[in-house]
Image (cartoon, rainbow, N blue to C red; front, side):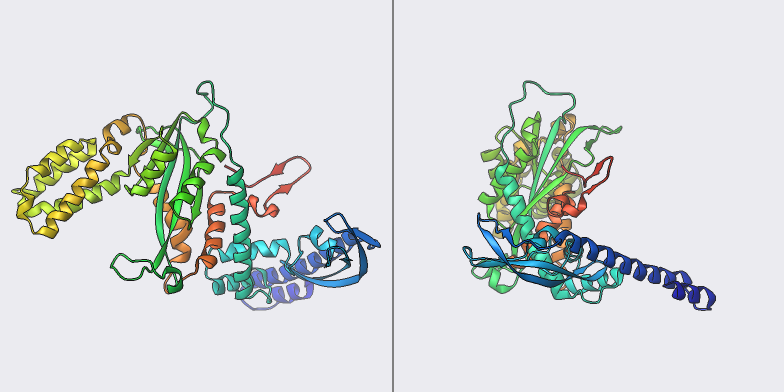
Length: 448
């Protein structure tokens, strides 16, 4: 390593520091491998004649056996005792469990690196990235694929267990000053492109076979105050997400469990935001009857634009009519908006256009109590669901909706599970290597 560094400095080649940098990296890896081999073999010690099998039996030592472990620094060789339990009829190496490599040849750090890149980019690109950063030649796209799915499935199991254990907290005697005033549950769904085998028998929007399966997303955060302009401000670090391919009933249970896990039942005012989909308000009515329900203002504006387009042939001055209708929506005066449409002779429109106009009117009448925007603004509430729109992009679209991609649920759900934990700042739930302890403090990834 020293010779390479000296030759690089003495020569005329460009990017001298890059050559030195790679040489130092290779030298550091060499030292790192030696250290890890020493630690691993020291942890194994001299294998005892028997070992606890984990099921109450004593297993006998068969023989010491070698194992090659692939790490972020390269391959290391270990020798550990291999035992066999006659009662359980299985063999095992206790040191593998201690090192975190039971059932795999990859170290925990390399597993995390593979899964962390695999959840962000296509597997071939992830392989190139890992190889470029670490210099490891043995990491393949298939390895990253396998590790990402395995770790994502483990993440899903851990989250499911955590949500299953979530329970209501004690009823607070009074609102506390140090507790956020409002909590938000923002719900939505987005389609993920699927292989035909995953959508067989499901109708698409055009009447043919569906090409996607819906991923339901929940975004949770708190609000304690307003900014200088009087607009609501999300509490820093308060956001967490849930995601699932499950149907509404299963998702509703997850929403309620995350609500309890976050301690939102201890917060004075819960608010549910959605785009107007009936299943969202079904969850709100069934699971959170005391919550304030708000239709996303920007979705409502889109519906108003569609309505205006349908009735334009009946308007003397479409610009004035649209401006008046938009002002009515802005303050939440849905009665005025509906009355303005009622004055029009919709029957004189073509039947299909008249039907579409009536559907839009029905959207506003059904959600009237969720569109009291003037009052919501006065109370300092968010009225837009941009947070969950962003979550749909972060958790699903950026990874799963790239050109030519088609998935199975088994292949995509683990990826989304990992991304959900990552964007919630909760990687430590699955990767304990994210937690670093020192003599004076413990530095842990952010936790909601």
